[in-house]
Length: 112
Image (cartoon, rainbow, N blue to C red; front, side):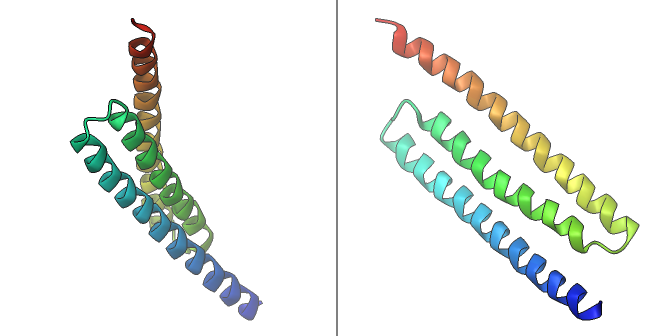
């Protein structure tokens, strides 16, 4: 059982790092794109930036969920749980912002 446990831990740790790096990359890419769109005065800048941040946070949330597989102590579970709650709250707020921004943008596009 020790070999299987160690193998699972290695796979999970690699997946956690992969998801973390992808999440950070997506957030950085969305931020740079947001700066470029802001300079160009594109009207959908906020919406595109919020969608990029939401996608990056989804990857980071996935890494935290995977982290629960390798947690060994109760104090670590509490820390990971708090991080998951914080990231879930951020994701919820960003999705709420996206919904409001899409509604506002839709109304602006309908006006003559």
